[in-house]
Amino acid sequence: MVDPQTTLEQVKEYYGKTLESSSDLKTGACCTADALPQRVREVLRLVGDEIKQKFYGCGSPIPPDLEGRTVLDLGCGSGRDVYVVSKLVGPTGRSIGIDMTKEQLEVASRHVDDQMRAFGFDKPNVEFRQGYIEDLTSAGIADASVDVVISNCVLNLSPDKQRVFSEIFRVLKPGGELYFSDVFAGCRVPAALAGDPVLLGECLGGAMYIEDFRRLMHDLGCNDHRVVSQRPIPLRDAQIQEKVGMIPFYSMTIRAFKLDTLEDICEDYGQVAIYRGSVPEMPHAFMLDDHHLFITNKPMLVCGNTASMLGETLYARHFTILGDRSTHFGAFNCSPATARPPEETGMGGACC
Image (tube, rainbow, N blue to C red):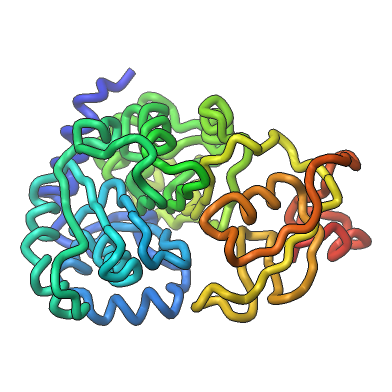
C-alpha cells in the first residue's frame, strides 16, 4: 500500500519542480481536448501567459450562470480556472483557489492585481490559499459556504479520495454543485503501479476505477451523478505505454449536486421540465449531461432525479418543473440514446 504522505510529496515534486510547462507532460491526460465554451475563451484572452503555461488541466469544468456565486477550485495550481471564474462571478462573487504546491501558488498570487485590472474590477474577488484538498477546514472553508466546487485533473492525485469528496459535500450549500474534470480508469490500477511517481504525476497512477467512484459517491449519499463528457486518453510515451497500456484511461467531466432527494436509479413520476432559455450563454438549449439536452420552451419528460437537479439547485430559476412525486409510474429509461434500442431513441424524454 502506498504511503499517503509519500504520494503527496511526489505530487508536490512533480508539479512544483519537474514540470516547467504543460509541454513537459508525457501523456494526453492533462491536455484539454474539449471545446471551450465561448464565454471561457473570451475570458482566457485576458488571462496572463505565465498562468496559462503552467496549466495542467484535462477539461473545462466551469458550469454556466456563475454571476454572484462563491466558487471553490480544488488544486488550483497556477490559478487559470480561478481567474476565469473570477471574471464570470463578477465583482459580487468570490473565486477561491486551494493548492498544496508552493511554486504553483506563487505564480497564481503574483498576478492578482494585473488580472483585476484586466477584468475591470476595483478590488480583488479572488484569493489563493495553501492547503490540502483532504482538509478544507484547515484552509478555512466553512460548512455549507460554497455554491460550486470545481476541480481540473487534480482529485485523482489525492491519496484519500473518500475524505476529499466528503469535504466537498461538507462545504457545498444545499443544492450546490460539484463540477469537475478528471482522469478515470476502465479497471483498477494495480497497487504496484499506483505509486509510480511518473504515473502518479501524469494523473494515471491515482485514477479511480469508474465503478469504484460510483460506489464512493453512493456511500457519501450522492446516489446519482452525471457524466457531461468523456474521451479516451492517448498514452504518448513509450515507457508509459509499456507500463499501463493494458488499462483504458478516460478524461471525464462530471457534475453532481448536494441533494437528499436523489434515488439510486431513475424513477418515473410523470414530471416534465421546461427550460426557459434564461441562462445568458445558453439561449437556445441547456445541456445537463451527455444525454439530457433541454430545448428552450420545449416540455420534456424527466425522471425524479433530473427534476431535482433542475428544480432544487442553482438552476431552479431557469426551469419550470411540472408535477411532483405523489404518483409513481415505475423506472424511467434515462440511459443515453446511443445505449438504447433504435426503436426507443427519442421516446424516453429529455435524452438526445
